[in-house]
Length: 340
Image (cartoon, rainbow, N blue to C red; front, side, top):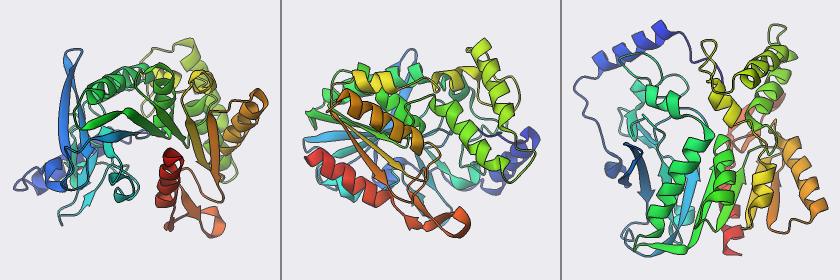
């Protein structure tokens, strides 16, 4: 939800990347051990990747579909030294004995990209415009993702190598909104994991909460600006971005719906996980209180003490300590819950 940055600067950076790496061949996700698949969808295509245990690509197993958070990031990134950054934030081997892992690319983005061709937030920038790809910006809203992800689930359920009796959808951050709606609306989904989301007005509330923290350090960081922005979104929920640097009104409006209704409507087992230092943690606590009062027995909660939105611990001064990596612990807990 932060500014995309100066257009001229991004365009210049993109051009420099192109000039600096003319002899480097584009690599493929297959080189890093993934399968790539493509489905037709409304005159366009949906690209996604599958990670299986070595030698077991055709072995019948359940599916765990991970839906990532916001930002226009390619699924797989690599650098000039040959290293690669996988689409799954946890150690993939945790799940591969029991599951095939799946991740779906966002519209208009390549499945894989050299880190030289990404901006400072890891997003892919169209070298011709210096901006995020048009297809991505036009389709970056909740209903679009729910519909096309559901089509991927339908396709996977029909494959010989998929055990369709167990289809798990795990959404993290903004992806949790998509997962919540899939749990409510997508046939075939049997389990859902809701990670670091907020059941109440998630996107706009997260924006305001983060700006509130900044208010304490910087007088120019005014949460009131976000309330003014939200008013403009409510007045015109389908409008394009009203100022450079903001997501479109449609994006913010669609990802700021209350998801507690979708979560309660879903009858499948649901696991809610979050860090207690996440700005959205109080709203997960509130939802837990609500579900206990209403006796929603299919929803389980697990809070991680002292970690933030992406399950990193905090160091001195409350800053993120990237050495305190918590994703593998969370993933093992996900697997234990699924095994139960």
